[in-house]
Amino acid sequence: MSTGLPGYPGEPWSRGVRRGEDGVVEVAGVGVHDLAAEHGTPAYVLDEADFRARARAYRTAFETAFRAVGSDVDVYYAGKALLTVAVARWAREEGLRVDTASGGELAVALRAGVPGPEIGLHGNNKSDAEIGRALDEGVGRIIVDSLVEVERVARLAGERGVVAPVMVRVTTGVHAGGHEYISTAHEDQKFGLSIAAPRPTDGSAAGDSPAMTALLDVVARPELHLLGIHSHIGSQILDPSGFEVAARAVLELRAELAARTGVLVDEVDIGGGYGIAYLPGEVALDPERVAKDVAAAVDAVAADLGTPLPRFSIEPGRAIVGPAGLTLYTVGTVKPVTLDDGRVRTYVSVDGGMSDNIRPALYAAQYHAEVVGRASEAEPVLARVVGKHCESGDIVVHEVQLPGDVRAGDLLAVPATGAYGRSMASNYNLLTRPPVVAVRDGESRVLVRRETVEDLLALDEG
Image 1 (cartoon, rainbow, N blue to C red):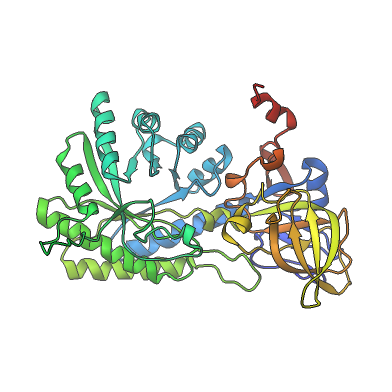
Image 2 (image 1 turned 180 degrees about the vertical axis):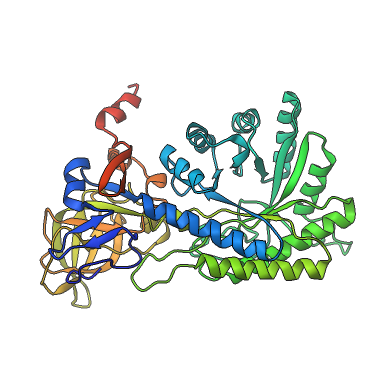
């Protein structure tokens, strides 16, 4: 967002962001000074109309593309990106289901009025209590992640006299996405069951893969109904070819299971991880492009295998809520630091930090930032935006050009923080977590209130 150019700046900002002639930014018609005065800083600001538009775009693109090849698709909003009662309601009102990854996320979705059959439950180490709640609420699918979990879900379903709808999560060996911590389909990690058969060291024939073993186990248990096979290959994916390769592997596994048991599962989930723009000039993954490419690929694979297409499902989270959000800060200390090569980097400290966005410290994730409360004609300087925590790695934006007259009291915004900001927030140094504020049609409202010191003390039994 150029400090001198009014109007919509483009991604990575939400579509409701505008900069006025005076340099002051509005989000969905609400000025940043008004937001700061009413809600304080730091604050997560969520553009409701932008969220809804992106949700509709994914649903429409995938429904259209898969209908063209004779299949149906369900779109699950991946709640781990950001889940509040209001956000869950928005997703459902736009025709999405909700995917949860814990008992807490499940409770939020249920409180939002999402019916159990429209909820999925993920997790590599679900507790008996979490599985039990899912069964009691009639959750539409439980994605089992291990052989032990197959037994656990069957036992709990049997105790209740119900049949549990399950999908088996498999790892396809496809590596996709950004940092290795968010690439989830390679073999050496905690999620899913490998479709690769183990290689015997004694020269004997290879046995069943862990994925096939789990599928056969589910089919054999009367307490379980095998809905389908689930695959998730990573996060922040900008090349759709990974989805195509993974989908082929899953459809081949589906055909093999049918040949062995006569059971042709009805559904395949190809996960989420659709990438967004975090920096100016970056291009997000286009939902229409990826939907058409994947639909064409799975249609060709099914034809090769001689099997009808299943129903598909996808799980976008970041791609819907990430660009819809920004974090609003107030600048405190500004400190120029001379580097070893003679350059000067200006350290701009804000009133939040790694407690409200851990991703730069955890993944070296890159973000953008701008002064949004005024115009400036000052020459830009090399800056690093940092937080107020007692930690040298407390970096919000590693490198960005900011006006040379940036000063204490300035309002600064970091775009594309709707995903994994609030949901990964902490109370490090006993900072209180910021509020989540929704903006729409010139009005703002609090979705999740700001924590207070009294909230922190109320948990301390000392």
